[in-house]
Image 1: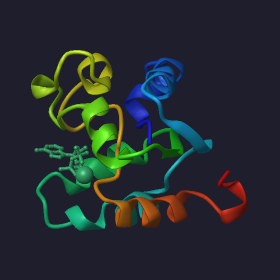
Image 2: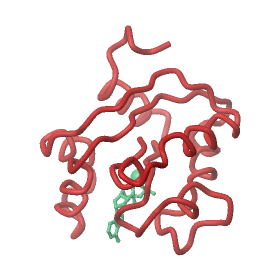
Image 3: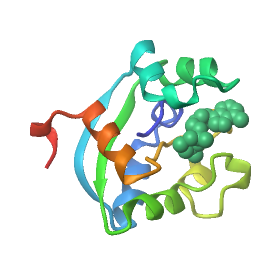
Length: 131
Ligand code: DAT
Ligand code: MG
């Protein structure tokens, strides 16, 4: 996902260019908005964390871009491309270093395993939307 902060700040095109330049194929793509209930479900794994309410409010406050990406070693390579969760710790040249505003509003989401990528893909896209 390209998160609401990066969409608000006009970075959709530049972030998609960084993603395709890094060798990812876009398999699905859309501009959409999460409801509060959607954001709660998507981030349910974090529901006991102190930042959960803030995260849910942020993720549902405006449009996001959802995408399914394909590449060899995609999970690890995408985490490398986006950089550390906290942009203050993100490496030069990463998406979060360039476009994140804070640890909470950090421009992009990447799945953390093949299993979660499959769950998150089905959350956003019907089968006929996956190319
Ligand atoms: P990541 O998005 O790098 O996988 P995560 O899964 O640990 O990070 O957390 C999910 C999101 O929750 C993260 O992108 C932003 C928010 N978050 C994490 N730690 C936070 C913190 N200490 N304060 C505020 N928001 C935080
Ligand atoms: Mg995570």
